[in-house]
Length: 407
Image (tube, rainbow, N blue to C red; front, side):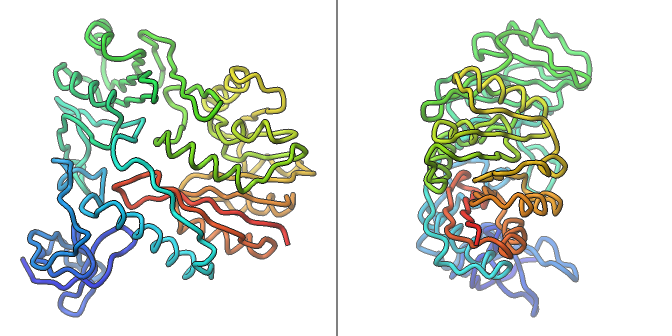
């Protein structure tokens, strides 16, 4: 069914919002202040959704997406917006969410920092069925690709090679790359495959090949990890460890954290959900002591290696659940938290409030859970400033850095 719809605003996922039969209609690939012909895809009691198939009246901030797979691939959502509009969309989105759910005035949100619009991702996760690709929007149907324009160039060279190989028995392939063109290919096998075949065919295209079978990481060739440099620090990245997917964006993020921290050399820092230790290490030379806590043992092993690589003697990392392991810490001046999208567990918040650091720096990729947690932290802390970093151009995601001070 096709209908002509006037779009009056965008929702927080970048979809156009209009009305159909007295109900709210969400339209993919539509912009605010547009008139579109929309195909109604899903019409039930709770949600009506559609797809813009023809733009009758266009927003001046619309553009033709550079990616030939954009209409089908589920990776990017807002590539039909010019980049300045993408930034404004994200800024307005965070302002609305934090004001509505945490009563944060928009004046607290000082800025949004742009990053590279394309060729920024240092990691892609490819699904496999004869060839490699990404899932189609809202389905498990595979969209075959020969490149991803938001990924680093070295990753695309490997994608092109993978599509020339036999990929039987493989469920997923992860490719990671550094800005120095160090690469890693991680093959997740669901049945027995010929390791020699992939070693022979991929050795000229990547520095590292890891094949995971039955939960075991087999290093076929290479060191089994890659190393990235951010600022003056080197970071080891293991096959399964977390690392920010936008390296240039990560450096901007860490500099904002350092700016907010205003360290003088006497501070004791807790770095919670620390991953491979990137933030804690980045702050370490301006601090007295940094302690990082992370539940993923692979990430903690990398973090401890990163301490050695960078010659630091005031940093330690512990493999524990943040919610259960920070009760005993005292005399902490700064806590940095960078939790998963689900945000902080209530037990973790309670423990942070018991410690009562002078400052909290909360890093979040989910403004909704950030708003929820700020509502609790605001009982004892003032929200001083929030900076946004566009770590994920062409998607509706955005990174927030929030500074809180003890009252």
